[in-house]
Image 1 (cartoon, rainbow, N blue to C red):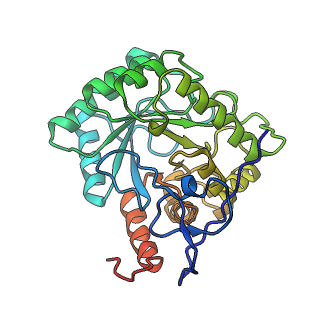
Image 2 (image 1 turned 60 degrees about the vertical axis):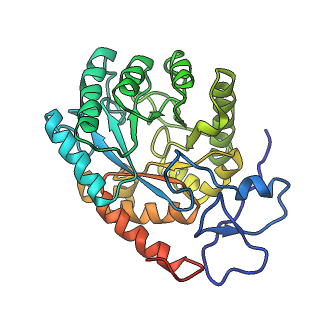
Length: 323
């Protein structure tokens, strides 16, 4: 076990002399004598053309009948395209298309069924003239391959290449970024008494190993994104510890994706049982993650998150010129 340097993120103004941007952020800074200070301060671009100095908003478009928050709300390709268009108009930087629920207890979806749910939607989004980058949320090589052929730009794998051995080759050959997310167990088992010795360090070390594996399979290190996997084999305490220590994951040298939108812990802490009613708490977590320097925020409520981030950016802008 190697304990990484843990930068302490700050966004207060004015910045003192010697303050360094955290992972290229225009809004979050840090100070310290880390041996890899240049690496910690360097921008971590996700895709060419996307800003690397502010959090990107990834809008969720689930074409599933059973996702925990919005399952079954998009019953046709046309409805999914309209949801995607609305999210882009609301300010989404990336669209995340998912055809298999990974909520606790969810059953596996066969490859052909998941492909039939997702690839036509991606193709239709592109046919509609929507050029926003698209992420395919899948752990299966066949689904990812079809999605990339239909126009997807990123693969978002909740298993971090542990579910399908062929997925690493598919993404490496296509040259697309891949997000490696931590999970303990499968959707069927992950919330059955998850335990860690030190959740922050354990998740960090696991992601470091999965990054090494991806590189050994031909993935360009610059095309790896990491996600600590909030809610995937985690108790309430585990989730809070990971959120409080989120900036530690910058030491992995990859962009950080945070997906906490509408999750159960938000409802537990706020007293809101209905997942679709957890927007305010989800925005609060998104703002916390932004203050930790996270590069991608995966959310259901795009307009509300974009508006909140616009105010946060104005309040943390060193130049005072942020609109």
